[in-house]
Image (cartoon, rainbow, N blue to C red; front, side, top):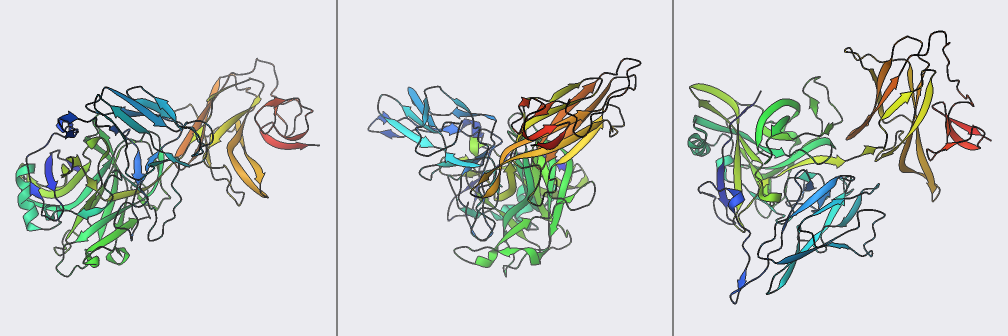
Length: 545
């Protein structure tokens, strides 16, 4: 288990100069100062992004944030907190969160101090980000969180820009207000003697050796699918050679309300990247000093097997350390980038050192990397391959009749239950209410995607019908079953309950096409048993002509 040592080392990074050590800075006390013109204090509009959302990341050949935009989950209440100063009134403008988005549609407005928005888009959608106008007796001023005009945000899955050299490749913890990645100080360099002397006093240790760095991702507003991690590093070797093997590890962690790391719960996954797999990344000078590392083959910490990815609904810490601790020539440092939303620090350094008379490995310390313009906090150049998904419905329980019953649930989903080859893409897991969580044989599940033909092609309409059938219960006891439906990034559970039939009543089984069983059309509406067309009856699709 990695050990955490929380400390606040604040570094001021200035373009064109070496970083200088300064006193610790409480970022909560850094005011967003409004400009003064002719003795008139102008309003300063600003709002905080909800913690647990992310921004478009960078690509292997792009030495900057690429196509930067805010990424937020659908069907989740999001509060944009007003941080404006020196104003007497303000007005928000934002996209209508319901219905199909069209940039020609008029924006909604609000004079509330802060706004809460729930974007209800079935398809991943790029829309305009909220804007706020702050006013005082001298003037008014309008801003959005990003700098591109008009500013954009992404609701739902990835932007779909691909994964080639100059295209979108993940999510970062930092906003696009400052898009370029920059050199980090050698104080964070691995196996650099000078770095150890800097950290000894801060950590209360001796003989500190930097082994790597880490980035904390806060608990998301909604679960997301994580399939990989990427980062940029800088070679510190005199000949700009690639460092030795680097191990990336994803940890499940706990944080306090402010987002500070409090405990490492467990290791989730890892992957070790060899030098041959590190890609040269361009730059204005010495292009071989920078390397892009993509970790796409995650190895599960419990099973040791390579996995497709994880559904993440908790905060994680991603670290990058030297895999060969004896390789003294393996010198690299992280790169920093962007401006942190809410000015919250989430960058960490990993060191080995002697503490309290004992040698410890993997000590983790929080660091603050300040940007001189506005003293906002930066983060490490780390990107996760993430995607917000959803699987939702209005009912989560089924009280089945003792004599047996079928019920159909209509679920909205970002991914269809069946892939293009017709194979089941969702996982369906049945467990009973006992301690051994056995798989019951009295519950049966059928799935049917609702598709429509668009320009000659069958298109999924983000609606899947789930037919749950319970056999007659002649066991003499009540029973329960959880039907868990899931795909990467989303899950949904239906709890089935059933009393036993009265003594003397024989078991009744629902036949494959029992016309007496409840019948539903493909919109999930109950219809007469003699209705025509494609129907769902007894948990199965039937065609009645």
